[in-house]
Image 1 (cartoon, rainbow, N blue to C red):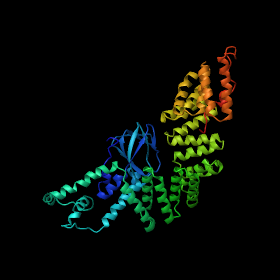
Image 2: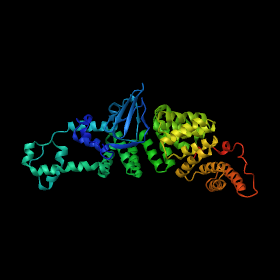
Image 3: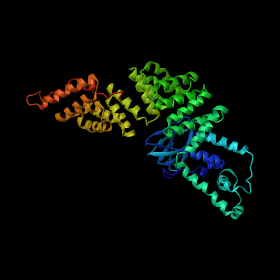
Image 4: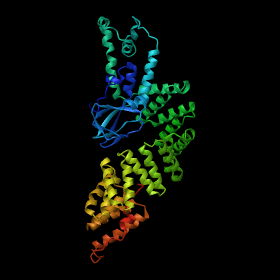
Length: 482
């Protein structure tokens, strides 16, 4: 199965008993997710709400006892999680870059509810004769809404058979087009649900917001959520979702109010606790953010992102030991958390644990080759160990990934200075002066620029002049907040 080829729900045994309407419903809501090699998609014991089909790549299912099973292209996992919200009995890791087609539990439940509603509808007979203007409409509806006629009857009416084949051709094309008509219909349905009652409320909210965000129309999602809240003002989930949408629209004050309201309504809503903590952290209120982020971890201990945010809070408060523990918890839960690995390694460097820091920086760089902080950290570790030749390519790679990071230029200048390339080093130190506003970094760049300048001028300072004691310790650790 290629990445572009969407699997047909009707061909999967799990969904074969569903009516065609429910199958189409699931077909339209399948979504593709891509993962890099080495990513832990699910940790054993986590409760997930989806099943997945492997579109390309390969997965390893690893039990708690260590037994492993390989799932290749075309394989399926997670049926019990989708159907019963059961905890996963195994960890799922990608062996190579992998793409999945995912069906969520909310969509599964909604499809089954649609099937039950359809079974309760009174059967209707198709009129034998219809006005000419309605003939094509009935031909198109017959395949979707009414029982198929017998082969003998179809053979007597070749024109209707020809017309009935058109909706099938159209259905194959639908997944490749954004369903604007479906979106409008869902918006109308959503407005009805606000008034009528709670049936399908969770599913409708989730689907509408997701469609709006996928269409890059957060304003539309905001309008729907505002309308929904007018009918359900005590819904913490809606408040939290509206805060998320407004945060995406760079409305931090309004988002903060929504998150605060969500936590007041439902203190045990983990996502709201996390989001409020992140919003407070962005406002510089680390002390107020910390208890919310800690509670988010307590409520959802399997969420690696929550641990990253908790680590950021501890780091902002100056508690590097607890920050390191939170970052380590994050990338232990999810080895694809390259940022958490880089943050941990930075703090390990500050504690003098250079060998450990280098090992974790290497993992972070392998997980995310475009993470400039990891390459910068590898360069700094090599500098601290007195290996400027090894530091140079790592720092050059970091500069290419993030050309505006003054720290990378500073470390490059130090490496070039150690390699007795004063002119190249001077260029890097001058670049630091143009990029940074940190007084300590600027002083360090000026000091070293003067030293390499003296080397380039005949009669200047001795060529054997050494770096000032403690130079790397003073300014030679990666920035923690870039």
